[in-house]
Every structure is written in C-alpha cells, then in structure tokens.
Image (cartoon, rainbow, N blue to C red; front, side):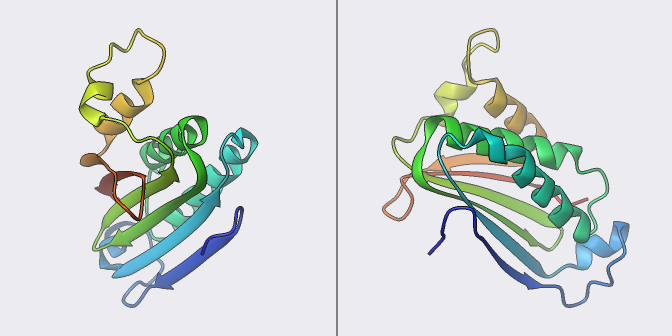
Length: 154
C-alpha cells in the first residue's frame, strides 16, 4: 500500500558498475515508486528531481526527455485524476517503463492525441507521445486509469 508522499524503492542492480553510458544497458532491473496527491502541484518539482536522480543513478545521460515525460504525466494525473495516485518507474534491460495510476474517470488516448495543439489541454500528451517509444492508456479493476510510457534509458 502506498501512503501519500512515501516512496517505495526496490532496486536490483546486479551487473551494474555505476558508470554511465553503455553500462546502463546492463541494469537488470530497478524500480522506484512514488505516492501522489491530487492537486498537489507544489510537489512536482521535487518529484521530478527525485526521478532525474533515479535515472542518473542508473546511467542515463541526457535526462531532459525523461523529465518532460515524467512531468507531463504526473501533472496530468494531479490535474485530472483522483486519489489514490502513484507513479512507478521500472528500468529493465535498458528500457524505462513509466506508469502513472490514478482513480477517477479514464480517457480515450486517440481522442486526446487528435486534439489540436492550439486548444487548451492535450499538448502534454502529444509531447509525451513524440518523446516515447510507446504511450498507452488502460483502465481495469486494479487501476481505473493507468497511463504508461516506455522509452530508452540512454
């Protein structure tokens, strides 16, 4: 169970020497999870900082695209989602899977991506879709709205 503001960290760094660059692809698995609170926009900068440090600790070079993806998905969850919320970053075999879970009403990703960038809202998801290898939205019994982006670590 995630308590708001608490981090749950499970890290398996077997085979990782701590160097950046090519060594990053040797990370077998690393996972970090944060609890979020709806409308708590003041915490976004701190969460983004923690995410950046997590990515760097695993050998990511330029973390700006990672931070943009993280920031956009977390901001959307806080703006439109309901508690409870969480974000999970899982790195395995050089790929990052970032999953944001929240309660409340889910949305149709294709509809949102078809929205004109000149209208209010929707641009963040378009940016995430461009920066990610994949972006999906799913709703199920365990997660009323689960947004997942995948992208390379390096």
